[in-house]
Amino acid sequence: MRVGVAGAGAFGTALAIALGRKGAVTLWSRDEGQARAMRDSRQNAARLPGADLSEGVTPSADVGELDDCEVVLLAMPMQQMRAALAGPLAQLADRPLVACCKGIELDTGLGPTGVIAEVAPGATAALLTGPSFAGEIARGLPTALTLACADAARVETLQRALSTDVLRLYRTTDTAGAELGGALKNVMAIACGAVIGAGLGNSARAALMTRGYAEMLRIAAARGARPETLAGLSGFGDLTLSCTSDMSRNYQLGLAIGRGAAFDPAVTVEGAATARAMVKAEAYRGLDLPITRAVADLVDGRETLPSVMARLLARSLKEE
Ligand SMILES: NC(=O)C1=CN([C@@H]2O[C@H](COP(=O)(O)OP(=O)(O)OC[C@H]3O[C@@H](n4cnc5c(N)ncnc54)[C@H](OP(=O)(O)O)[C@@H]3O)[C@@H](O)[C@H]2O)C=CC1
Ligand SMILES: O=C(CO)COP(=O)(O)O
Image (cartoon, rainbow, N blue to C red; front, side):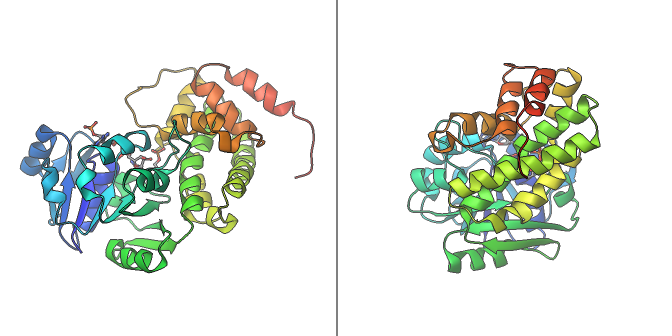
């Protein structure tokens, strides 16, 4: 199956490299200069320096080159996906589209498959998510991910097409659970980075991971997602990775907040918009989400870390 990857960021490039080791992959960048540089150097110096493009990868800025791809991975940040699908990628609306982003859309409260369903109703909407760093995938290190698609037959076909000998995909039809796991772990990673950055300790981090997971389960229940999906790679797995590794950009933003340090606004940090989206969305109003709300307050500078910590610790005592 010929695979297209739309979006030549770190993750899109890493997935193209992994899949380009077993077949033909078109890696589409919206930037002609970047595509040319990738063709010439066989690297993506801007987004994934040091990783060689594998043999099967063809970089291109011509969206027409995605036409003969039977499946296209959408590897741009969550808040950019709607515009890309409605704009240059509109011609792809008749095939499986696999979102590779982790987030909730700020304006609608939808996850990636919900956005695909709205903008490209003729497509089969799927999601690839789970614990993985682009640099490690590109190096061929073993990685397990969740592939979610509501169509049980289609998800099996895609699972076979997108797995490799080191990239092991597990499948599920619970798209809501998979997208919530991937989106919300980013929010918790910001919170965990903040407590570590402020020197509040590993015990505080473990408390945030566990109570953050309780919030994730509450949100999943409100969306009709299956709790066991949250216990899998997209939830528990990615929560563990992102809350404990300083390779995570969400965790790095938290570290900067905790240390009172500056953070480059150009870095892709999905958890900030997702925290805002959770606080804003009607669907989640009334849910008890103290950590998510605290992160939204922190990233928007409405409150300081000492004051959100005091607020969290002053909550009434309760049953676990
Ligand atoms: N990096 C990682 O380790 C992992 C990332 N992810 C997820 O993958 C998603 C992308 O992250 P990542 O690749 O790291 O981000 P990067 O910041 O490395 O790259 C983002 C890419 O998206 C492109 N882009 C933005 N808007 C559009 C658009 N409208 N049309 C086409 N391309 C666009 C950018 O292009 P341009 O350069 O022209 O702005 C850039 O190439 C996120 O949701 C992230 O959570 C998931 C797992 C691991
Ligand atoms: O999603 C990721 C790991 O699974 C990458 O995390 P960051 O986006 O925080 O870097």
